[in-house]
Image 1: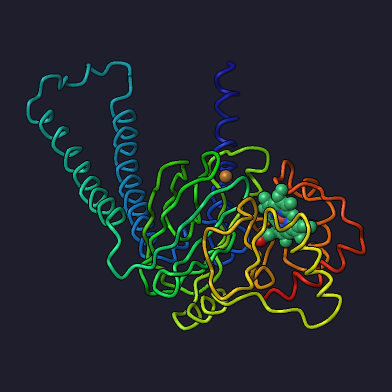
Image 2: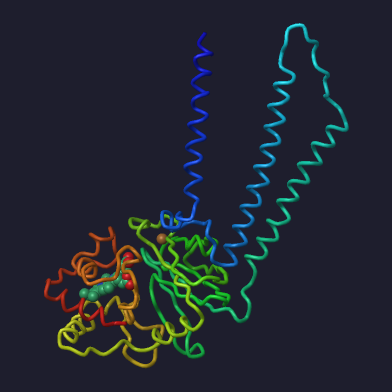
Length: 353
Ligand code: HEC
Ligand SMILES: [Cu+2]
């Protein structure tokens, strides 16, 4: 009959499924960070560690419950299967003891999940401690802006796309958007938060391991949503202070003529309408040029255009030649720069360490 043929089909499908599952699990080995750099399974902050633990705990509990229920179901189906000549098995409908048991056990399981879940929610959504480092995060189509208060709050360091944090210090992100909805997500850092115009959302965490961690916008925000990436660079406390000190300083003054020419083109040209490059000692946060990333220390960034290209001369030239070609819809227009101009500008931008 047909059903038999079908059954043998299933018996082949099961091992195939098992094999696929094994392959998938093998992906969880040592190297999975290389293959999947945006994994949630390699926590590097106390926030991420707590939610990771909660996930694994509920997963194990769920697997145990699943094994028990399906095991029991299988056993009962087999044990009480129809056999000719056997009487109907005993009916347990309305058995008070059984009813109580299978109400009580699930309630216990739910409590075992609810208590740590609620505890983790409170632990990870708490107000930031007084000594927290506050970083303002601004989502823009399609890049990220970060602001650090320095010199006792008198000045502001403004940078883009690469967020620098010190390990061991609680960090509080105060996040908002300048245009549409975005979502800030660096999986290894922990939670994800919507970034909403006219509203400030916070995200608190304490980095625990130095390193570079990838993330990206997780809320569809237009053409280049998928190209709105970021990196979190977690430093040792000394390394962080060194970075911040350098960022707080003015842009370096050109030393050779090509670089000086590049500076002319940038600071006297259209670029200055959208980009700030600070030379003065005071770093006023309300300077003009708010449309694009602050370029004062652009040369020290690893990537450009929100993490999509490595920051080197070749890519920089490609970007300046035609930004919307690199990043569809880019708010930086094609400025029809001549190749020669691009050469000078690249030379200049690279000195902005
Ligand atoms: C109309 C505004 C506008 C003008 C004019 C403009 N830019 Fe931009 N620029 C932007 C925006 C917006 C971005 C962010 C693009 C993105 O990543 O989505 C950007 C990005 C960049 C970046 C990459 C920054 C980073 O950290 O990733 C560089 C470098 C840059 N611009 C240089 C220039 C130069 C040089 C000029 C002048 C020749 C110029 N821009 C003119 C708006 C502008
Ligand atoms: Cu976005």
